[in-house]
Length: 218
Image (cartoon, rainbow, N blue to C red; front, side):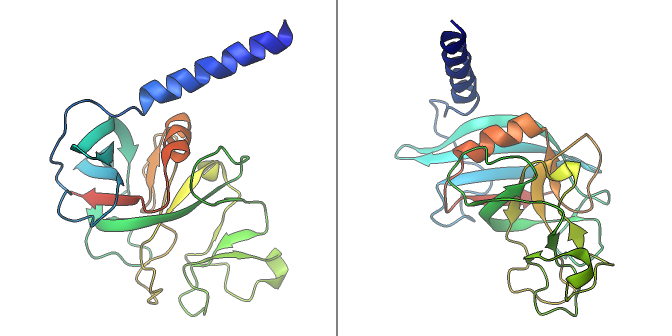
């Protein structure tokens, strides 16, 4: 009986997630349609004022773009958005960015993107003088070859229960910004990331496949 109950509960969860992330019937022409190249999956983040935004999820099909999930409340940088991102700006960068991999303090939730489970020795290097600036690094606190002050972040924090890396400043230009993610949120503004409810983020992560992008606009 207990095994049967687990199977029933698991099936119900799959049905709920499927209902949450199932394309609608009508094809759309979203605002980003001419900006995302051949991407088939797009997370749209549009600012609605201050540190608030709405997040919509789209899938490209043979019939065109279809909405998968809509009007998800999101928090962005405490100073809003800007096309001119830089280290410490507290603004979410506008533009279209790749979603290359995911990470989190929690176990792998499933999905098509590579996933790294992080612990106390995982860092996002925000040292503008470091050759590994704007990348994930693994080292004990007292052995890291980069500065742990400034923009460097330890990744074992509640906000990173789950996170998807936004490909901002992939050229790693010093000072042009580091550590931009879509991550679990508690309703507070971010330092430049996009934050949403963790359960919703997990559903989206399970849906994402390589080649997906995030499009951010005011």
